[in-house]
Image (cartoon, rainbow over all chains, first blue to last red; front, top):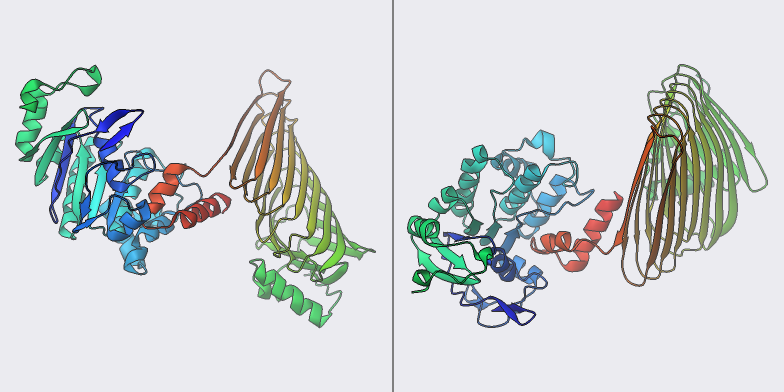
Length: 238
Length: 320
């Protein structure tokens, strides 16, 4: 599906995300989870090589990032961009453009949903004055204002304290209730447990998909780290 | 309250009002007598209005105006003083000589708009001598608006002395219209406990040429400074930045920060220079030149923007 320097990074990825479904991708570091997210978004250097990528009945494998976004796909990075000089209100409004002009109330609501006080953050810059955790929340708020059909969240909990994990789970569920499907890449059992379905990745392949708790259990008990450079457990491949 | 209206050439005033508005200013402010303001078109003073605590004197010369402005001792001017310098015709020379003094314990904010909307062959020189007195404060923002032709040379030169405990903040912005040729040369000497921040933001296009030289000498104990430059250049524009900070006293702290974004065939050079001759002083620097950050561009594309629009927003944010 995707190769670099003659080496396949993703292979045997057979994944289906349903309408308004929360689907977790679980796997060890180096399993290819983020690569899968970037490939779905069509980022530069992560172009799709083989197979099909069907979204709403249309093959989008050859579409640009912008074209995919305008069809309703978006991505929240594990480590959000900094954006020097760009105000939070302007950043949040960018994603909302496809839905018409965003109101002040909608901007405030988006920040409240990620536990940020609008009066404190709306007119601040996304960039260096904010911590990694704050930028992460703002990134998630920008997904809320965009109201995508498919939100790909790459480790939305990283950089956010454990106490806030419940809020992340609530946010993911809110995205679903607002009509989005959510593909969430995570190490957290709490997030996997809140999913409708989960898939396990290992060495660039989806090994199995199914009930999130079963997948999560299987991952804990049967998988070994990909970065130990050994083959996936035979049992997992059978 | 002192109020001086030196010249009233109505059509020129209207032209300058329009140019001032185009530069982002609110022209109505220039006609409020309760606000201090100075409007110079070419070598004519159209309006010079001082308020309590401000001495404002002007002298028209062959190619410009000599300006003397004093903020009297102890006066904290509550509202900004608005300055508007410009040339409406396509060609001409404007030389402004500025002698500015903020006396001890005074404070003022100057907001300047420099506008050359039709420039085809215009030269604008400013030669400023500024003294920020003991515990005095000057905040100076200068926004330029140039037309689309690029036929302009802007050569601002300033020597600034900051006395003990004084503070000086300046923000020079030239991001609207063509730069033409810019040669920016500011030198600051900071005494004990003085604070200085120099910010320049310039957007060069086509064959614009940008030269920025900023030098801060931290001569007094505990003096602090930041030189911050944000340049974006595209097409065949060329930029050259030199930011020099000298730490010459105990606990003097300085930082030079230059970030340049280049696109197309543009060429950029950034040289931060730090000199320290006191072992208790510390001066740091950082400089980065490169294309627009890929992750930032892709993030905005993933929100539905085209690549060019994403780059435009990122560059404007950096220069905001």
